[in-house]
Image (tube, rainbow, N blue to C red):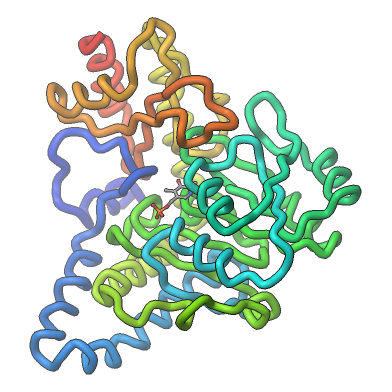
Length: 359
Ligand SMILES: *Cc1c(COP(=O)(O)O)cnc(C)c1O
């Protein structure tokens, strides 16, 4: 069975066309069952007893995050998502509050940095928003910041940042590297042993909503000072964490390299099929190895209205990304198309026709 067939057969049939994995992938039936089974177990034996019994499965999820992040000794903390992970880390950071990041940094991350009193310096990037590693090295040598923050794959554009090249630079300069892998983990190679990495369950890893993880190297973890409680919230939806653990296990079983290769193929297919749609322009290079594609309107269409019509009239789910997602880089809203490994040409052709129909 191909990866695509395996993916589809593990899930309920989709109603319409799902092209929205960058927002929220479709969970497998096994992941849904893991969360539901745990809720039933809580009802049988009591929430705290069931929680203790769940510890080994939760630890397996932590081990999977360590493996995918290439951080063998990291402390892994369950969070409610990526924003929560970043806020937990920054609010516990005891060093100076300066950070370097890309011009295309995720808007909510900039808000969380500001809320935690961080001063932000921008690193050099090319026209596509890709980090210029050589120039960035020189900037950081001349003006080191206390932290370097890199979003390896953005929400508003499917360009992979040169994380594998950049991580050793930060290490050599002695600057802690924090990686936003909300779109990256389970999608592109993130196993660079950064100092800190965080992610969300529901995106490419196809776990439940409302869960995420924060991984921190022990040396950095030891220097954190949480504001009021241990980093990991004790009161949580344990079933959702279990579902995330299982989704991580499914990803490892499918093979991270196989998934990555297939997602790159699906991205190429997406950009090829959508290249000729009148009124829209594909932003990413066709061969960019991601399944996240964005379309810029060239005839004045509004992505938010188009997204709504695609759902209401064609049962096609996409995302409209407004400028607030990357205020330092976007000059207008885009429509984001993000199929998973089961993405196929028929679905994309349906989207292409629907885009013409909604005008
Ligand atoms: C979705 C996303 C986030 C925020 O993740 P949540 O789980 O919603 O908090 C952060 N960074 C990027 C790049 C994202 O795409």
